Amino acid sequence: MRILGLDLGERRIGVALSDPSGWLATPLTVLSCSSRKAELAAIEELVHQHQVERVIVGYPLSLNGKVGPQAQRVEKYVSQIRKRLPVPVILWDERLSTAQAERLLHEAGKRVRRERIDAAAAAVILQSYLNAQSPATETQRNRH
Image (cartoon, rainbow, N blue to C red):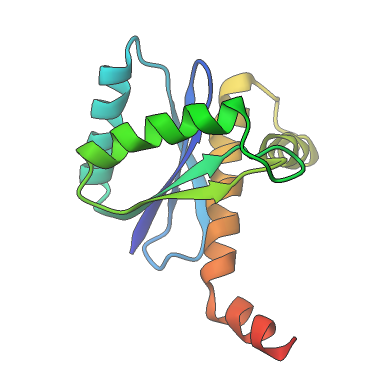
């Protein structure tokens, strides 16, 4: 089951894709479209091209967990995505994902370009979702 991860930014959308087993997220691309309509069409094409069964979208809650202006902007965008896609679209807490992506890229010795960070942030968001869905995580939760 392939899952697509999106990090919705002001100017670009970072995109990540899971492996077919749904265990590992990897950066895929960055969308820099001229219009919202073109972005939605590009997302729709990626879902079709990679046979995606679910889309995870980073939900930028504030550090205290409240819905601020950025989160509201994402909610509106996600409502448009949901109208276009035949698969579930899920909001996923993305707090600190960009900072984590920058740190991971720096540790890997990668040159940190904004586009690379956007795609890496999408992978961090998607990997967080995948980890939360894994049977091992569920087993750990049941033990506590």
